Length: 159
Image (cartoon, rainbow, N blue to C red; front, side, top):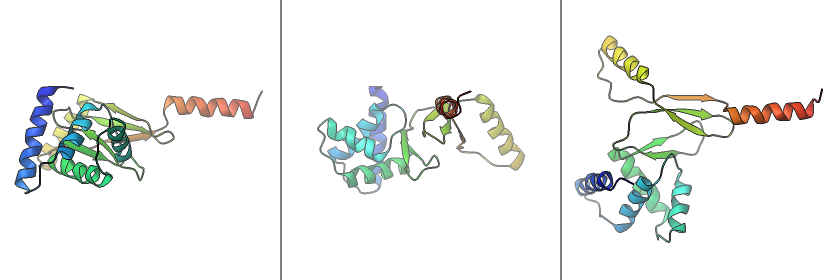
């Protein structure tokens, strides 16, 4: 974990809490640290379970409420990825990226293609918009799930 980035994120979060007149609790900072120690996407239950495994005492309600504050501040991004279960990821200081999501196993793969930024700029210019950010999610069936389906089809229809 990049300690300089974590300290910067903590300062931004502290300012956000102060601006909203909210308490700066150890639990909120523990949640922030847990998120910034992780890689990839996670849901609330994964975050909560990970904190419990490490012996951190925090309630589910505090996890939900803190995630809402972090999303509001732009320090964490929230995604729906076509399921009822929200997924989160740290976002401060990370490059804009997009996602490919498997509709079978729900695996999420991040990718970055500079052509998308070019399209974003062109569309903004064309339509006279100052584009702040974008979200692109592509849905399909991953190679592992396709291979499993093909193997199952071969087993049910032996030649």
